[in-house]
Length: 173
Image 1 (cartoon, rainbow, N blue to C red):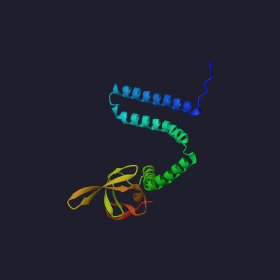
Image 2: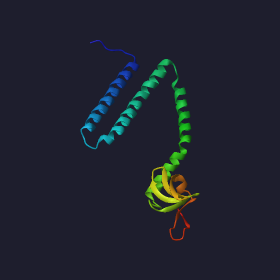
Image 3: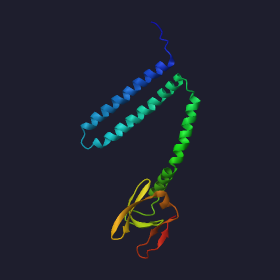
Image 4: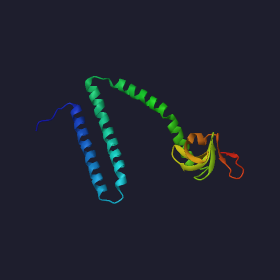
């Protein structure tokens, strides 16, 4: 038997090809299983997204190998990824703050759906509490308009629960 002496990227590429095929096969089998079950079609987007995410994570090492083969130094790639990570984190800081405030509001509720609250200049009835936003129904003239308020604003000291009897804001702590 002749020993195979192939360059190491060939082994990595073949492993990637095998794993990518396995993920694709698992996705198709899961989608076929969902077809036969009543009410399970709601899982299709999750299956597709999970398979795409797995394939992306499998493709990243291949991309790094290709960049190394072309002659791009991996230290510059890591530098760009670090710079990109800082840019993304600065861009998402408000979303992360809203999400953390939403988790705090859900674990320690100070108001519920149907309560009248005041958040800054917006006063209305809580229609829904989400992970990052809360929907208030406010009066505008003769009608009512939905407003979304970030949970970070609601958890700050400028928001308060409005008493229906006295119409005075109570502080949320």
